[in-house]
Length: 306
Image (cartoon, rainbow, N blue to C red):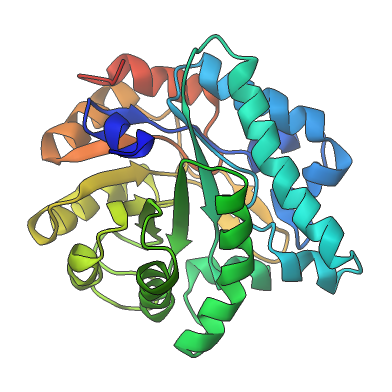
C-alpha cells in the first residue's frame, strides 16, 4: 500500500486551500500567464511559507504550485527548458520544505497537473472549450507528469479538468506509461451535474472506475453550493474515494484574471458534515480559500485522519 493509499484508508483527509489568492494578499503579482507559478521566480519563500501555513492549519496534503507551471508555459515566455524543469523541481521542494517547517510530523505532497485550458490562460478551465487529439493531450501533459514523479510527489493531482476527452487522455496515459503511480482526478463543473464541456458528471466518473491508478475522483474549484449535488452524482458511479475542494464561491474574470466576490462567510460547520455524510473522503479548498478556511474545515470534520 502506498503512502497516499494508507492516508485515504485511515480517515478523512484534509487538503490545503488556494495558493494564488494567498500570494495576492502578499502583493505578489500573479496576473500573468503563469499565474501562481510566477511566484516560483518572484518569491519562492512566500510559496514555502504558504504551504507551511496550510499544514499548520491542519491540512494533511499540500498541492504543489505547478498548476500552470508547464514546461511549455515557461519556454513560450523565453525561459530555457532546463530552467522550466528547475522551476517544477523548486515547486515540489518548496512544498516539502513547508511540511518540514510546519507543526506536523508527516503529510502528503500532491503534484498539481492543471488542464490544457490553464496553459491557454484565458479561463478555458471554466469552459472546456478546446480540442486536441488524445496524442496531443498526452504529449502536452507528459513532461510535467514525468518531472513531478521524478521529484517524489506522493500522488498526482489531475485537477480542475473541464474536458472529458482530456480526462480520458490522462487516464490512458497513466495506464500505458505510469502503472504504479497514484493519482486523483478532479473535474471542473459549473453546477455539480455536468463538466464545463457539457459531459454529464455521472458519465465522466463512471468511465474511470476501471483505471486503478486513480485512487480518488471528484470536483474542485466550483462554488460550495455545487458540492453536495456533485457528490450525489459521483457516489452511485464509483467505488473510489471521493474528493471535493470548492473555491470560495467567487466568479473568475478571465479578462482581468481576478476573482469577483459573490458571497458572504462560508458556513463550513454546516457544509462539511453534509458532504461527509454524502460520501466525501478528501475535503479542502481551492481558489480564494485560506488557511483560516482550512482550519474551519478541520474543526467541522468528523473522523479526520490522524
